[in-house]
Length: 49
Image (cartoon, helix red, strand yellow):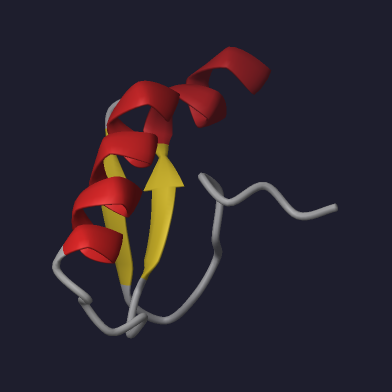
């Protein structure tokens, strides 16, 4: 299962945490924004290290 808040694509929107990721995803869905970019939660990167 892939993590929707950790998409490694060519075009990435960085968000601070998982809550921000889910808010951006909800806004994109509500406004029918095309999926031309991935969303990456940067806090997950720092927690792993």
